[in-house]
Image 1 (spheres, one colour):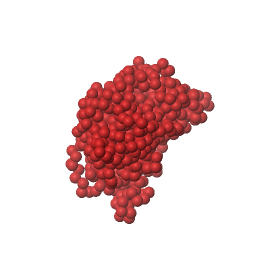
Image 2 (cartoon, helix red, strand yellow; image 1 turned 180 degrees about the vertical axis):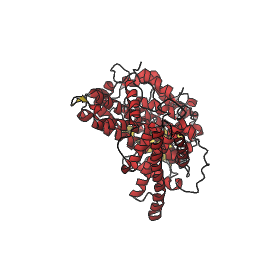
Image 3 (cartoon, one colour; image 1 turned 90 degrees about the vertical axis):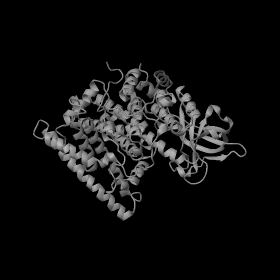
Image 4 (cartoon, helix red, strand yellow; image 1 turned 60 degrees about the vertical axis):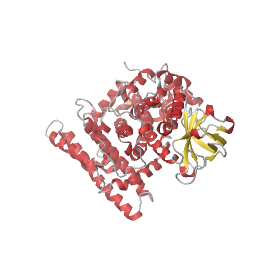
Length: 583
């Protein structure tokens, strides 16, 4: 089952969320949100379809084949309700250490709980320490004469802490970075008088979710509760977050699709000043720009998800870039679409049953999950100097960009037991380090087509790639300058700005590689270079606002595809498929 096939199957089953009779409708989800309650009918419907099985790898008895498949499934659910998707996301986060490092008994038990519809949790955050993992105070002391541990302390706030039937817990078992371990809490088989759930936390968004905590008072944990090896908890956490950072992009992609779909539909139906709102040039430009941002975000997210199977050694950097870039792009899409909706975006029960205001609140926290934007930029800044060294061998990883970016090929099955995740990329980055080669290939293709019908498109691509190439050179120079003056990219604002710039240049490289890997799809929007030109121009405008020179003459081609996806009820994507309710 391909990634799109599974997602399309879930779409068909769930139906059109605008219809109140569908399994997961906007109306029902907004009402559950207002009551701050779990949408039980939606959970039951997802269980009926078998959605929880896609949180369990095949070798553990589930149906999860690859992370790019799961990304598409979550995208389908997230376009209906982010809070519900986050609940399943927290469950996978709690299960991932078990899938990677747990023993057979632990894997079997967690698979059983998830398969029965149970939620899970990941006990990482603490009230006074947030993302400062080395300051964590949940302590697992030796149990004296008996084997195992006595756990004391509180994890708060964490997703599904109360609702979850199991949790993996990051606990101190020694001193220093090697003084942390992961423990598995099975709530049904534990000393229930030695732990308690903390009250649910009221939140601005995700109101139907469960954000709470767990407190332990010398709670006994048997030695078999240890996940992996004692002392490797910090490494296990950092590697786990590489995968969940990647998957979080699906939340943003789903939210962006709904934001654009609601705003675009409203703009076409709403009449002001004797014409449709869509006919107003600035409104139309905002909508087309949002569509381009979705395509850019998708070009970043999908190869990162495929890298979990194809190039896990690169995920420490690529997942941080994706986790920074995709939610930020989506925040901009949502803000622009709220301007298109005008006063209607502020109403809690109007356009599309009031889903837009819920979506705005829910997505505002996505950039904080699995490390804030600053945390992820810190990761990028830490690796940036080694990526731009002239002496880094370019053949060290043998990672195929064609395999990462192909929309027709299938990624190998993901086997978490054979994980090759690493804590750094060690200077390798096939996506950006092949930029010059990719530009040369496109330049050759443009030269071949310059005298034909595609001449204006070829000229536009040549110009925008030349401008981006100049920025790549400036990036290298600026990094070297900051290193010479400050010693690292972590010590000041300039280093973080260079990390942000690298994320945008990485996005440009992803767009370029996506087109090169799929240009043989003749006669399709994906194979056409028009979207590439406009996406690169959009990125260039963010890097150098002075480069913006009005509306592109190629914009109508992209606009027509956006409108086609709306009218034919297909996903806003370079590889769209029919959405629920389509005939």
